[in-house]
Length: 279
Image (cartoon, rainbow, N blue to C red):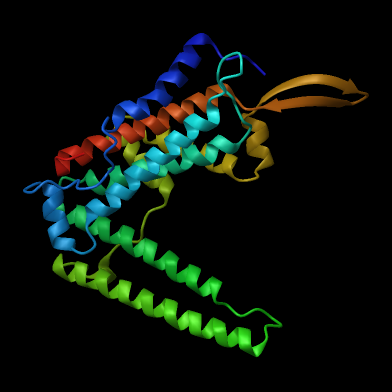
């Protein structure tokens, strides 16, 4: 494995430590983000009880948690460089941190309140649709199920769908309060688009975020081709026409991913403070 340079290690160390610098030193979490009189408080008042600030707080907490997990995963106090570079495990953390921070940026960045409200409702509707799909999967009958099992599935399905319908009513209520027809909402964009738009908001090319998101998404799944293409390779032996190759994680890719994740997290805190005045 090619050894990382001292500059690369300093960058990685700084990025991992920045998580503590970016959050409140007194350990305060991401709640009460909407100060009275702020634009985020106005958004919350319109969409209550589905306040946008609640979604933002969840996004920030999620991103922070993933970054802290990355620090634990990548730190090795016994190693020569005090870092450990797993082959794949870090990619899921980077992906989740990018998605969480980018969603917060996407929800808060429009200067027009009506667009912020539409995005907040689109996000809620997207989550609700996925919850319904989960309920249907969990309560689906399988071939060979006994009558008692099918009856239990039916009861569970009715209970879960009752909960779903109640959440749907709250979504319609919030949309009505905002003067928005739920049926007129555009579908929720994919996270590649959201991360790309967040990068643009941060003054970076859209491909900076969306390309990195695509890379770590492939590396979070068992894609042999993506892993081979992005890994560092070292021939350690030959056997006739065959080569024995050692594949290790690309430290450059790991560092780039961590830097992007922390940059987007910092970028999510800024519009939160701008809109809510209490980040």
